[in-house]
Image 1 (tube, rainbow, N blue to C red):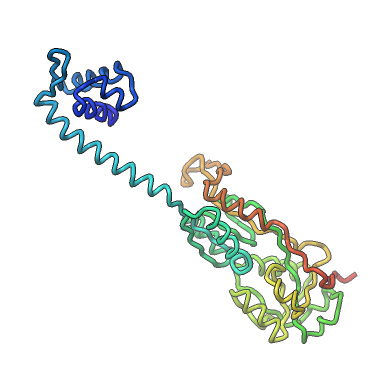
Image 2: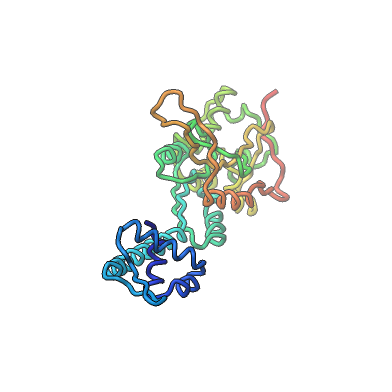
Length: 322
């Protein structure tokens, strides 16, 4: 028997009429009559006596009525509780340090405005740790600038970014419009910690050009890196998105790498769906259609897709030696 049967039975018992119960429940009278017959056949007892076209509930019917009201009440409470739970969506978002510093606060504000019933948790660390948290299902989605290694994750490029070489006003590069790769040899740099996507891309560049630098600062905080550039005469390679204020006030000078190899994208990352258990051999992977919460995050990120240009700031270049 179903909750629907019990609700029909309660309506008939309270109204003492099949037709009245049908009107109350917006059902046809034959549907109500069939539900009562189903109950009587199922429990093998008469629930109503029919005398002179009137219904009288039996003793068995009165016992069922008491229990049916309890069952329906509990079911309605369950439904209400679950509906309230569904109304409060939740999203656990990870972001790499660069993204968390320059973008995520604005993204979460927009997401909260668009989805006021969404509970958002934000975790910020380097790309490597974010990847591990996604794989352990401790995060639902993430936005990172580094390379995602695991085939179990989908990474969708969504926000434009570019690394730039940056120096402070007291550095001798500040008066230059062109810096050559060989001029970086032996220079003091502030660099990100191991596991950072920014550091990995810069190390690949150094290795490709056989450049050796002096690491004078190593930090997992982009603001610390920038302070080392402004106040301690270090060079750094960091996201252009971190420099909006400094570029406007000319407290730094930036150099774009001429080949465009430092152009990159922040990526929206989430778990793929396994067609088999990950423990089984021969597993196959499919891109999983994101949840509605992740789709909302994707829509907000689209607003930040284009990399803001530095206005009338000189177009300075880091060039390879000829």
